[in-house]
Length: 159
Length: 182
Image 1 (cartoon, one colour):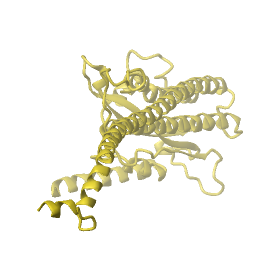
Image 2: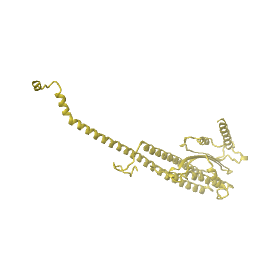
Image 3: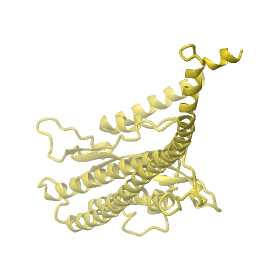
């Protein structure tokens, strides 16, 4: 909706509130939690693989020869799992990026709305100004002639 | 409250006794301390891998206890993994499914002379235990439940590690797929 929805005046469009921004923020946080958990898993699995590979290299390990192949198979399977996790991490990162972009967009929408409101208000204020300016000379003249500075002589003659 | 506290204390004492008996590495206590009743996930970020190798025979003193099948040459490792499980399913709208990130802590010890293995797994819920039973139960592959020779013990310990790692990878895809960003 935020990306494809119409934004024009006569179109039906969604009005974004702070709530939407909060929602998006919550999503981003949740995705970040998941990414950190996945990264932790990858770290642990990498350590596990390194431990067994070290064990295969070490001379004190009595099953070095007989189980070397098993360790190789094990480490390759762990490698697959780690790759799988990496893929998920990439996807989660992409989601985080999308969410941040969306948040920006929603903020833009809100700014736009604020701007258009201010614009219509400015028009009303201008109309008021023009009307006031039209009447201003007349008001001034009538105020000026009602003071004692100007006196009409003719009026006294008649009276 | 008092009862709960006594119960927890009793459990702790029993755990300590068990850990002392099996000579579990002290680092594992860090892993267990993460568990407990939590209103909000605290310490969710804790994640670690610890190892300890004692493959050389110790000079002078003999640490082994033959009657318990311990030669003194062993390695031990502990780590924790995080998996995700579906806690409430909404069939009509998959976007409303509720998921929860769960931790599991694993301890493993293998005696490289006698082939004795020890596993201590801490996890809320019984799903891992169930799977481990399936791995070593009647329908399992013969190489996974063979503990006759040293090599077989070692191989089955590797498949147990793989089982745990598979558990942690499982549901993440569904979890990430279920997200539809508004």
